[in-house]
Image (cartoon, rainbow, N blue to C red; front, side):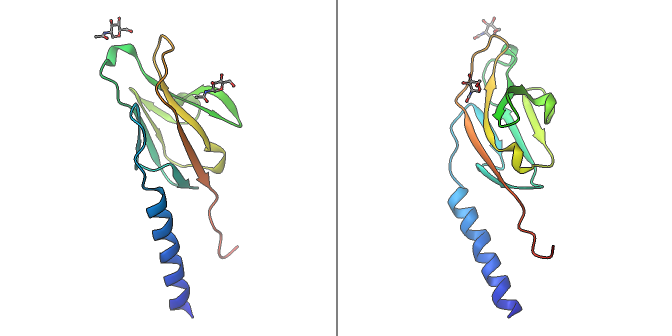
Length: 119
Ligand SMILES: *[C@@H]1O[C@H](CO)[C@@H](O)[C@H](O)[C@H]1NC(C)=O
Ligand SMILES: *[C@@H]1O[C@H](CO)[C@@H](O)[C@H](O)[C@H]1NC(C)=O
């Protein structure tokens, strides 16, 4: 019984991993490279641009706000934004924007709530 459940859980995880391990467009680099995350995951978002002096920063649109900068919801480090503890409301569109307002292509990130088995 327990073994069956564990196998089911494992296959579910593999399914999620295989279906979400897609190549994301250049500009904003997501690490780990996926677009689907779970609550409590960590993710690092980097602006991969040749011209460092253009001052690229990560921005996002979520239901909580539009065009907000990393320092409101993540930990900025140069042109990288680190999010240590994702929550479902982090679901939204992320992109890089330069000081002058030029924008990279955007990426849709989805954060699913944790499946609580023993609550
Ligand atoms: C790099 O960005 C700066 C600031 O936006 C700009 O003045 C400069 O011309 C850019 N250099 C190149 C090689 O694109
Ligand atoms: C973010 O939201 C603003 C305001 O609604 C909109 O103008 C902009 O196009 C959005 N950006 C992306 C990348 O979805």
